[in-house]
Image (tube, rainbow, N blue to C red; front, side, top):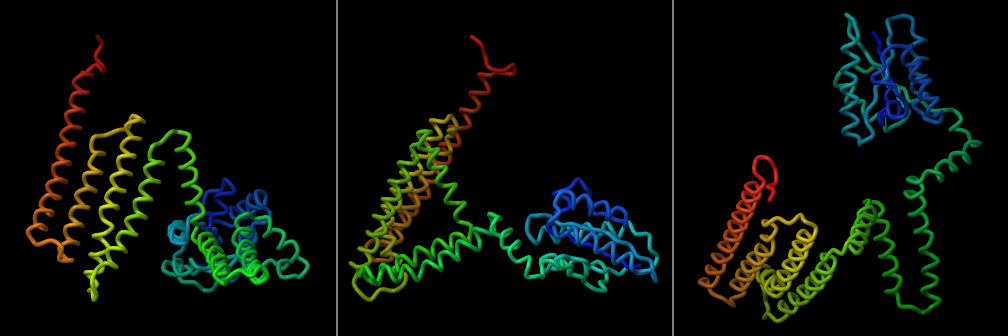
Length: 366
């Protein structure tokens, strides 16, 4: 038996119509194609379904069946897995005693990426790619370009990088005419490159989310906005302090000593930044009635880690001896353990007291 298998990898059929997939049988595939054509006449998968029916109708020397399988609109891996499961369902529904062979019908190279998945389940005789004749004609170029420009996703993907590339030459002329140093053009080019990279990696969504959180934080009166700014300033100071500490060391330095000098100069500022930001977060949690005692572990952990790193860096630089390092390691460990146990006990007793006050019938009444 020959199975004509129409593949819709991104599940346009399931998303745009009420048709349940997989679709098995000539009449069912025709009905599915009509439903998809009514929902979206421009969808190329309509042609795939009708082509599958056309191929099946043209074969009369052996048993033939036509079916349509779909994936999901969530990436190639998930889509291929979904297509494989639907192919298994189709094969299980075929009451054929002889071996079943498949002829895969797709509308492009993207859908053909699922061919290895299908081949692992059934022998494939061939792959037929459906190309609409009008799309090959020069007269349709205007319509195609218009459709591309109307698509927001395609517009951002194609036009933004193209516009940036076209801006490079006039920016070069402007820099030369204004007598600006060559570094200005480098800065402009670097900023444009960062923008293109951000667009390619989808970082603009993360930036938009960060701006939304910051804006909502301003209106909600969150103290973390202030503490994060202070922490950023402390981190900057720590970086400068680390570099200054490194420059003050006598040469030559081993890689371990270079790292130790940077850490030794920066760790106290980094610890202050961590404590500041964590205290701001704890304050916000308390003000919004979502405070838990375990949250107070954060500043103590930061303090313990900072002490340990400072002791290690001082030891590798020869500033402190092994006895000092042992005391710092022990003290940092005990500080972390003590804070964990103390706040865990406090939180446990508080929850027990609340349950006792509420009693079995709910909150107690006076």
